[in-house]
Length: 454
Figure 1 (tube, rainbow, N blue to C red):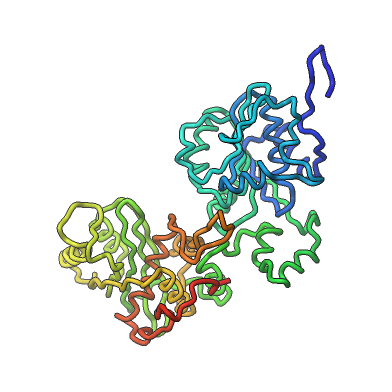
Figure 2 (figure 1 turned 135 degrees about the vertical axis):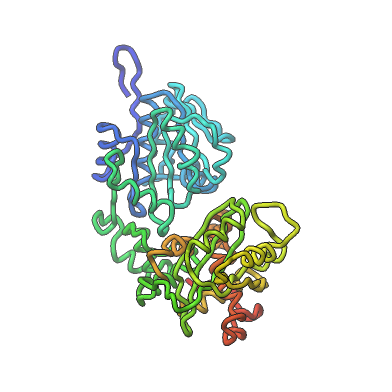
């Protein structure tokens, strides 16, 4: 601390010595004025530390409102409010005492002496943050945030205020973080810093090898955490390992529509939620998934038109168990199945087939396990089912932040509809493939609930 023109000068932060990659980020952000920043850094590279340093510097340079968002409140408490940096200092100690006007541990805010306010909170409920004012934002571990936290909540706010954002995270499969990275990596208005452990050497390779050999982590998890590889399965994914195996075995590629064979469709029906449809051709013991479609908020007639426009010849349309009672898009006394059959009767080409209702699983996990048991017979036409494949890879177990672990049951999110439609290949198998009727996966008492895919 020193005095200039009789005014007290406060050094912020205190005791911070940046590594070369941290220094490069600060140069781009502070000197060159980058406002849209991605820090794709490996675990223990110091991305949260330098992000906090950058935020508090900016908060002193310009009085405003700043947000440091973690995926959950629990993580905000653990990493920030109760967190420590190397040497045993608290994260808060990077701010000199004389720079802080007030700390509110109930609201999780820090008010600085220049009037800036910093929120350090969890972003798990984006709706509660709609309409906020912000001049700067750190999205810590963005791969685990809800995507709308940026696209819907903060992007318009920071555009209006001329503010900046830093996304810092390791990957978690080809999810929204990957989409963002892929979409902006050639955009000159974005700065992307990629830091891998094989370059920095911060974590010794023998330590990573020991973690893998002891079973504390897997090779794919290590590739994700320390080498920042996106294209490994998402943590807790039900089908990610099997999709990768299908790729390795050449079962994801060019498997086009065969006009000499009929097409079966497998549905998950939604009103306000997505309706998802897989288009499948049976070829002996093989299932060729030739197409995928999803939309939301449309009437059943709209989906009927989609079927016609595809130009396929259909055999069966497998509707979920609630197709006998639910109708989508309009008020009607008819069930979805009855409405569907009426539309089929209108078709002058007589190539729309008929509807069938899939069985209801005893528990969702049984449908998941049964579908996993069939996966070796699935072949994917990548050009037309890429979106559906991505949905399947991101369909995962529900994360329990209190226990810091995953539940056996799935999370219900935007990927669930594609997965539910996909699992109807198992639930509807008896109608077209009787040899599957006695699969042990479908017998509830014999199906383990967890760890079939770990």
